[in-house]
Length: 283
Image 1 (cartoon, rainbow, N blue to C red):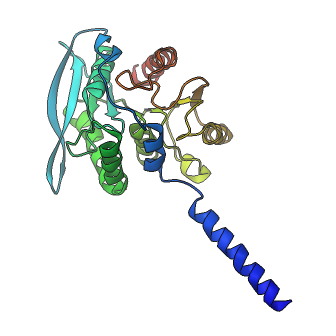
Image 2 (image 1 turned 45 degrees about the vertical axis):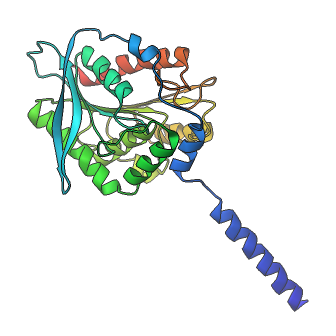
Image 3 (image 1 turned 60 degrees about the vertical axis):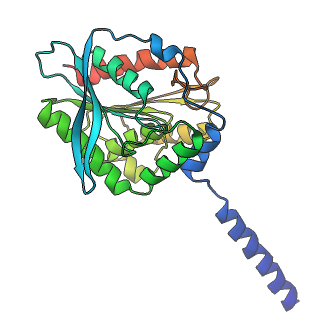
C-alpha cells in the first residue's frame, strides 16, 4: 500500500512538473507561430497617402552606452504650432518602410510622430531574424523602457509636444501598453494593435490615460480569452478603454506590407484610431 502511494505520488508530481513546463509559450514563440511563412512584402502600403504633406528626417533621440539611437521623425510641412506628439513603436520586423509609412500617415493628421528603434538598427526580412531581434529586446526590458523614455523626452523637449501618445503593432503593441504602464503621468493616450497584454489588476490600476486596442479573433498569439480578460479587468477598474475584436481577422491584420493583411478590419481600426487620437491629444 505504502509503495503504491509513493508510486502514485511520483506519477502525480511528474505530471504537474510537465504541465508547468508547458503552461505557456514565450511571447516570441507565439509570435513566430503567428508569422510562420510570413514576409514583409510590397503591396497596398505604397498606395497610402498623407492627409497633408509632411517633412521627414532621421534624428538621434536617445543615448546608450553603445552610442546614439536613431529614429524616424515626421511632421506636417510648414507646421508653426507646437503639435501633439506620438511615439510610434514598430512591429517585430523592426523599423522598416511600413512603419515609416504609418509614421508619415500619423504626421499627416497633424502630429509630430517619432518612430523609435528598439532593435538597434536591425530590420528583419524573415520570421527567423524577427524572432531573434524581438528576443534581444524582450531580454532587456530596462533598456527598452529607457529607450522609450528618451523618445518621450525628445518629443517633449526638442519638439515642444505637450500632449504625447503612443501607438504600436504586434511587438510594438505590447510595448505601447508597457510604455503607458511605466509612464502613467506622461502618456496622454495609448493605442494597442494586437500586442502582448497585461491582465494583472494591480498593474493595470496604474493606467492613467485613455486606451484603445484592436485584436483579431483568429489570433492565437494574443488569444481572445486573454483580450476579454484584459477588457473585463479594465472595466472593473473603471478605466477609460475601448477594446475591439475583429472576428474574421488574424494577427497582424493591419499591416499592409505583410501577408496577414485584412483590409476591412484595418480600415475600420484606422478610422477609430484617428478619432481616438484626435479626441485625446488635440485641444
